[in-house]
Length: 117
Length: 110
Length: 412
Image (cartoon, rainbow over all chains, first blue to last red; front, side, top):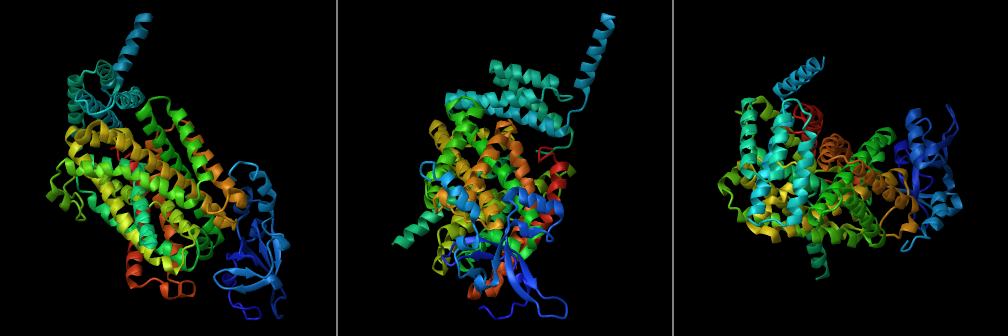
């Protein structure tokens, strides 16, 4: 599927894995941001990536639990960064340029201190 | 006063050992005793290393120890522990057969 | 030639890694209590794990979807999160059971303190998983675990009544048994199915397929590894049951610990057999501990979209690395509380089967989705078998907890 083609169902986007322009897994599409409203065209504006995007999708206690495990952050990936959508979402930019996988970049130097890391 | 307390304790102990054991705990006790017999025989026949026999025997003692407080099992578990320590395989085998008979009287077929 | 070696190594790894502490314990208890009459459950459950294992490998190779990523897409965030938490808890308890099994085996071989051996085991496993690449982690435990074949040799050497063994392969139920024996038989049916079809096996196998960068070219390797490897592994588990029926049943032993099961090989092979059995058990349980730990880490990483994989260096996937380290820590802590490995086995068996239907449903759905699978979507055989097993597992999942309670974990 290319940009400009209509996406019929939310499920074609939400909960898909996201890979950046270098083929790195950089998250899952946790929510989709639209603009427009009743009577007006609805447009996808951005993908929300991170447990911060669970609000409204889970009961409050479940969202709290998920944030305890995986943190509370959420990155916003503009729709223009999406290259195509198949069984996964492929981006036309790197994870770093979009603020994705920030935790990996923070933790890497810590783990790298251990031998054989 | 002391005599009354002593009689009360004896009565309680008698009641505990006369109580019916839980079938699951009875099965555990029977198996542990049977395992002890099997281990003794394997060791006597030179089929198992000493470290293995010692460690397994310790496991069996631990298992039986946990069943000491079970209603209806106190007496038989004490006897099994004593026979285990003495390596009296014949006595253990007799104890095992008694436990099997007791299980069968409660409806267990195997 | 290289392809053939890959296939053979894959099969050997599947065989050596098939039997873990749960299968060993339940196979021996089943044989000692019910003779050969539960063999059919091993056979049938093995067909089930082959069906779902092959499906998960095919999905990994073609759609390049690991099970937990598929879980969220097909079941939604809420049900997916519930399954993640439930299955991760089950994986951790199972990992603890395997670590406890390792500690017991080391104590049986070398004497010493159980908790100290548990600590040695977990440290050794952490170092192994940290240093070795994925393929070698799998192969080390799987191939060395082939020492467990001494149980197969023992079963043959004990000259079981083969006609009776063959009759045990036909599905049956002891209609003339009393109420308690019938309930216990039912519990063993559920427990054996759960032990053979543990969810962690699918998570690990499918994630492993992605770790090894499987593509459509590897579909034959997948079919042979699951079909041949799991079948041969199952024969090993059945051999443990058969030997228990010969050795333990006549003398009323219902093995309360993995250590007692070793007596099955002591009878025909003496001290050499015991040495092989202990070595094989150590590697088999160790391999299972690694699989359950990594399965928990894969599940969490895939659910939240973290980069994952042991084919990459630990520093390249920090959150995934922390996940499996924490998983080992939690499992080790459980073992250090002194809970009996057998108790941990019981819990992991019962709660695994409750989680199984939730694990297999997204797999069935995605394997049928031609948009993801193209020409490799499920054919009618895979669908008939897959959905039949699914229904059977759902029934078993409903019966598991009541049967566990009514039979005190198969002891009554």
